[in-house]
Image (cartoon, rainbow, N blue to C red; front, side):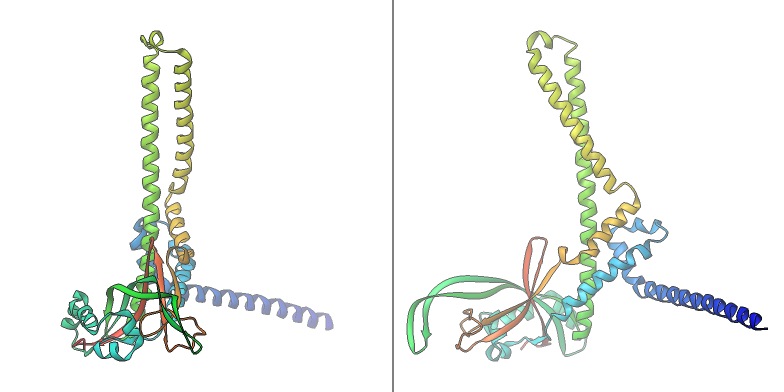
Length: 338
């Protein structure tokens, strides 16, 4: 009787373990499917923007889930670094040192707001009184010399850095800051997807150049060997001909080796998918965004953090990609552009 109870207890324990394992496995599968469903639209947008043929790979969504999620997290961290939108109008230029630093005059503020085609189109289509947008600028720093107070003493010929901003452009006008931030997150993901497309196109172009180079070398070798069957040996040095022939053969060998490597990078659709994975898995390599704090006085001169002179700290972001650099901030402004 005791043995039967022990056997029954052991069997219950085993069955309970199997049931627990099955439940855990089902829970993991459910979480996995929910995650893919959540990322579905983002993955499809990435595929459309990079290489649509990737869809011919049966499990392409699962293979892209991790890198797409990495790219989205990167975009989220970038947006967290963006301060709240600042008011942008002529009145703000007079009262907000940050806006004053961005523009030389209040008229410049009004010009940027009134002449922007995207902003005009937004207000034409939306009845709301306010617009939110991303303001991007180019920052210049010029070294000058001027006077400054050192304690109670006026010091002349002090090295100073004057900061100015130019090439103001407004992007992605929307009706709310939350909508603008969602738009920016989407745009950043699409930017990374197009960088993957650029990478694929670069590899294709490089492979094509190597194939053309190989064809040219093969043609030169054929022509050289044909000339050797005519009168050329009578008119040139045998040593020179042999060296030239050996040089062409070595160049052809190197080119064929490079071509083999190039073809391996885009030999199959899985290779194309891997290029997309690599770009999205390293978003900071292709889109560098970092916070930028500048302390300026009313004249646009850069101040040290511990300077007793009156000034304002500008909280901005610095974007760098494709060899370009821009300074940005979120702004809000009314229909009239004040």
